[in-house]
Amino acid sequence: MAEVERVWPDPLDGDELTVQTRFLDFLRATAVRKVAGLSREQAAATPLPSSPRTSALGVLKHLTAVERWWLVIEAGGADEPSLWPGSPDPSWDLTPEDDVAGVVVAYRAERERAAAALAGLTPEDRTRRSGEFTVRWVLAHVVQETARHVGHLDALRELADGSVGE
Image (cartoon, rainbow, N blue to C red; front, side, top):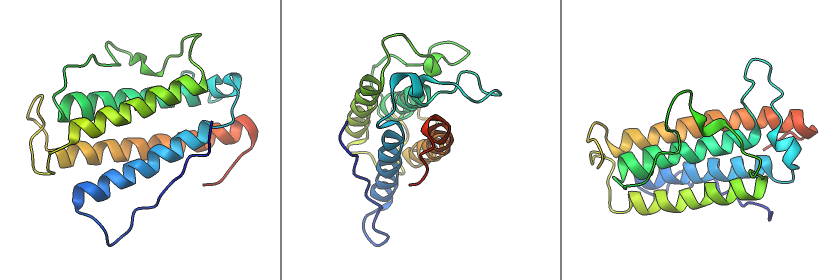
């Protein structure tokens, strides 16, 4: 997997939607960097006793499901299937076919779907599926959820191979 470029948003450039999207892009790139170079075994490990379903691959699969639901389906109104039907949330679960490359490809593909879904929307617009949220709220929610899970990926990566940092 090639090195993932992360670009810190320019503090003086862009409107609200652009700034939020650029922060989300930075977090997305950070999430992908956290799994780059891990073996399938390392990325699938669940080393947190209090969170036995939490693996680096599971976090990325969950973030893919978050983007599908909130950005593609709720904000954009797309007629796509949810990636977390049922409870408990199955988006954390791995299949034998899940590997680092495949999960990253799916995450990046969802990013493209999300960009298409948000095209033409403004922060004040109501979401196209339910109208219960503004695009501003949905994007802020996805940014905070992604940031929280990048923190989990920090810990999981350190436990996997000792890597720390950015």
